[in-house]
Image (tube, rainbow, N blue to C red):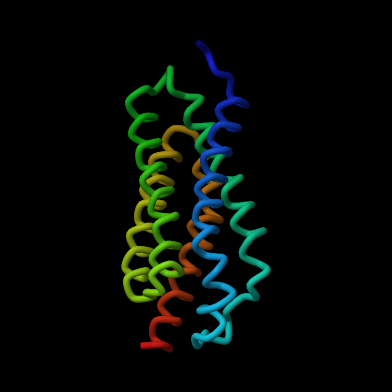
Length: 160
């Protein structure tokens, strides 16, 4: 059965949004209880910004994954490896929320977010070799996770 590019993007979007939703289940209660009680740096964004930013990033990630997946016939092995890295980083993305908000452990979350960023970067490199646009679509995600890492480090430092 041949799946067209749009269908691949829609499937990738469903997967990305399910990951985001699952992470939000553990995040939401802590944002209302624990998170307001900890010290945060002056550059901490308002809570309302996170949902629209993450929604946009998940959409961009899904389009990137769909564009890469669409090249499976021409570059089978490269696409499989690239999508494998994509799934690893997506899993790490969800795990960060469980560590930071669920376990309330900024130090462990900081270690994990470094691994997450490295996996995103590797995914970016692999996606870029298959489809330049797919690589470009991951740049905002890399930038946001880099910022999140700095924020995470600051929160850990302020609350150690």
